[in-house]
Amino acid sequence: MAQGRQYQDTVFRAYMNDADRLRDVAGALHGRTYAADEKIQIMTLEGTFLSQLKNDISFLIEGCYLILLEHQSTWNPNMALRCLYYICEQFRTLVEAKKLYQSVKIKLPAPEFHVFYLDENDVRESHLLNLSDAYMIENGKGFLELTVLCHNIAYDSGKKLLQKSQALHDYSFFVACVKKNIAQGVERAITIRTAVRYCRENDIMKNFLELHESEVIDMVNFEWNQKDFEEAVREEVREEETSAFILGMLKEKLPLETIARVSKMSVERIQELGRMHSLL
Image 1: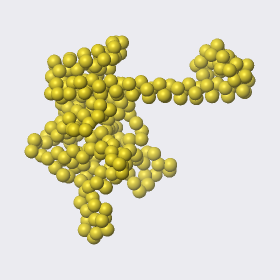
Image 2: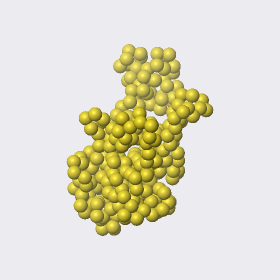
Image 3: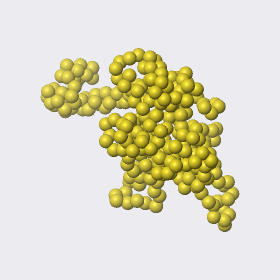
Image 4: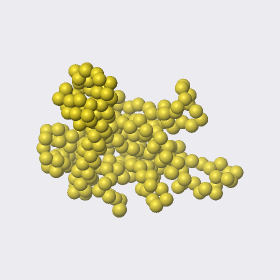
């Protein structure tokens, strides 16, 4: 693992920070095999004093493709905009500013944007996300476009991309093991260690897990704690929005049964909320 990595990195970021695995993924995405002597240059944005941008994985392959890989637990509709930020920063680091004003054409590696997410409820294996989807004009593409190819890698042995890429298959399988154990109510620390041991014994991410087992356990623990925190924040926001909605209906003197049906909250809880705000 690269020096200076923090446990707050994701397992995906740490696991894919490897030239051979990136050749494997690039080959699966491009429908070909990249040989071991075809050069990989990892260019992941790490965040600096001048720029706080930090992405998951960026790499040049044979100097002509600049591939950006991002990982999400669930699909995010803002990934095209985020990728625009990333590629601008990547080109800024690749090209000296003074060359922009010279008459010689600057040669650029062709950028590609791929997002991998894990959603068992999404039947799509892949789909496109365009920056223009967010434009505030109807049926208009504007003058700037950026397209992201989104891949749902929630584990399924029949998925084409997972069949083509051993690295993506193994990562997806490992995450599925962790999720399965957590769903069974096993203590989280035991769950993660069990998943790591099972995958090592079955040659899934074996070399990586043997070298970085304790780090992986810490990273997965951090990721799941972060998910719990984010879900708690979302739940708090949902409760606040529901409470404001109910208070508005109470002010309009709507029947309690109607409010309960619309808000899916019990009459008793609505009465309690109304009394707290002197509306009942």
